[in-house]
Image (cartoon, rainbow, N blue to C red; front, side):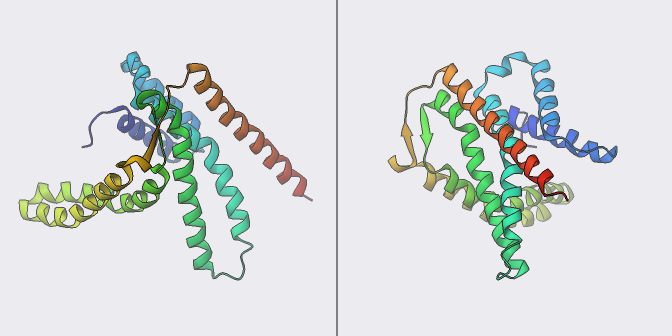
Length: 223
């Protein structure tokens, strides 16, 4: 339905392998699922490795896989101490922090590839994601529902589209507002391959040492 671009293929393969582990009563592993998706795409067309969309997609998800567990654990432990806030309020704050972390690390994961392909650094990407991502939780199921209703009758499909189109208009308006104008980005020079490698190596090293530090702290708390 969405086309066979690398980002779409990656998402389908990743979800299939990740959720398939649950079906076979195995523990899901995001890095393994991501590696399988990359291998499957490259086996079909090795030249995809040099596609900016492929690189952006996989480096972004890899960054999220490395950083988000640490971010979530950090705020989950602290949100449980906010006893002055009602449980529903704590969940809302934690969900907001999760969304903020998701948008921040997605920006960090894609920034070098965007700079290399387009010579730009986004200043509005985090804001755009914060405004758009919540709407996607409605757009995606409504999109599939509209397609299913259209198979039943044109009138049913039109009803689904009536619900879906305002949300799509909202997303387009946000993207245009955050993507146009000199304040939305800064033009930069193309980063070298070495600087990109050092950038992602630094993220991987930081995630590794922080995770090891967390494990050590957890072990120290065991009586």
